[in-house]
Length: 162
Image (cartoon, rainbow, N blue to C red; front, side, top):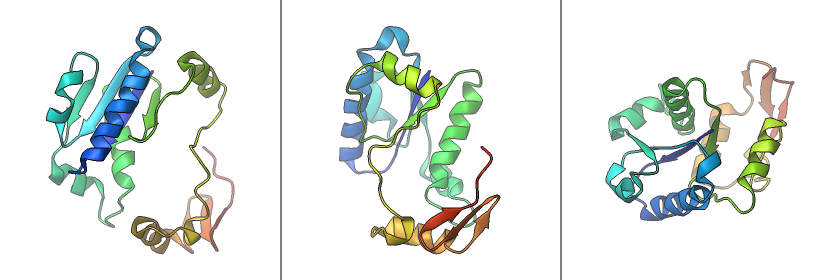
């Protein structure tokens, strides 16, 4: 399994959180596989160099990854695409920097293999969330359809065929 972190920007808290998260997984190293960090701050992770793969990205690449509609969350999708291309035959688990492993890594692997999804908490209906990023995202997707998914009145309709 390849664990993927995307950590960028100058907020040192995000980088500290990512390091803590990585350390929580490293104690399970024999069954782990690769830990990949896509970041515009590769020097921050040099103390972990023996344990992680760092893929540096420039600020210009991050801007490009937002695409023509300046869609912030597209950066995560592009990072997933980058790592999936580099490690095509390895299962990939994306982790936000503010997550950590509490419990059994083997149990997590088994649950993922069985198709269980994980989210730290239900964050709420997109149309009702209050951060600037979430309000902007709702402005971009509200009332629109993407494949079999349409977004109306804070709920998704249709059944995507993943």
